[in-house]
Length: 433
Image 1 (cartoon, rainbow, N blue to C red):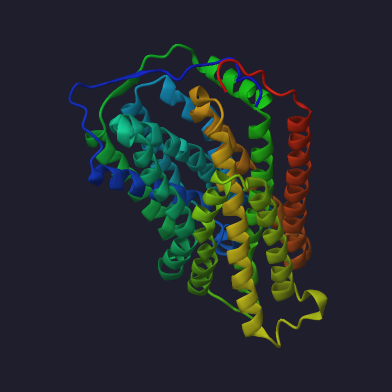
Image 2: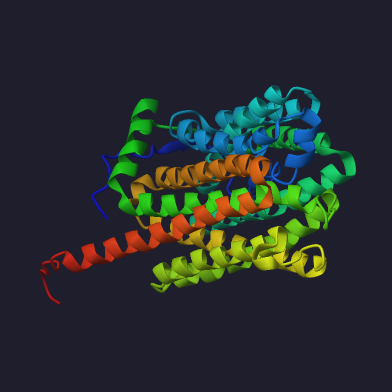
């Protein structure tokens, strides 16, 4: 690891004298809150077809429906989340959530594709409030329980990501896609109201301005090769993942599957099972098997996408129409394996960057998450264009290119890192050995 970037220290904070401790109930509420908020970022993926048709979006722009919330979130992580080190936290969190609710309400009523896309972009940016809630939860927990509290809150984030696609499909299938956005807006508004009364005041003693915080993030990205390496592989893997989930609903609606939104929801539940590898990925990283686990993850993603191409596009002469059941089973298994590979990549990446500069841990995580969401946004956009150009085979091709690039880059940078370690002079030992 290189020397850390010139610090822009995290500001100590003062809380009100009567600031409540983080009870088990409040921890559960924080976890539920981040889970509800993150649903907004992924829910549009299975709804791309009905939204595009209702708003009369050109086929080439359909990918923007899933792309813009993630792109907005990435921008919010860079531009809004650092405000937690500058402004009073309770007011910042409640205001940001209120803006998110207002932006989510617009898609529920608008007939304009432009208004819909801009509103979801802004809602995605406001969803970066997740990264404001995590330090707030940590500040309310006793020192000895802080790590466990943050882990419990972040478990809500993962659960929200896993449930976002099937939940959105179920609501849209029963009440229409606009109802999903109306319910999401109401949920965010209700959470903002509760937090306005339950959160303690937390005012940071800022030692640097907003511009200095942004500059420090650029320096961290320039000075931390581990961050760059893992952020790039995660972004490429997320691009493949997002390309698949953006277009799979469109493919499942076609023959021979003919799925409606309820069927797509059940498929999304099956695909989410791949997340069970999360503890295994962490275990592998803790025992020094991170590079091997990362190669295995990228190999699994490649195998998954080949299976998905066979089942959905008839690669290698497979007759999808004659073997509908086999095709659906292959698609489900491929989706689960693809999810497992992406989750493994992200778990190993998060572990690696959290071993870097502790004083900049929040900004390092923000950069990592922001960059892989940029990858997700790019994958969603290209999936829409690929679908309009050549259908499901082109979407699979896009995802394969991203996955192959992630695997090749991961192998190349790991070899360079190993070579640098071998070439480095041994440390000078002083004192007893």
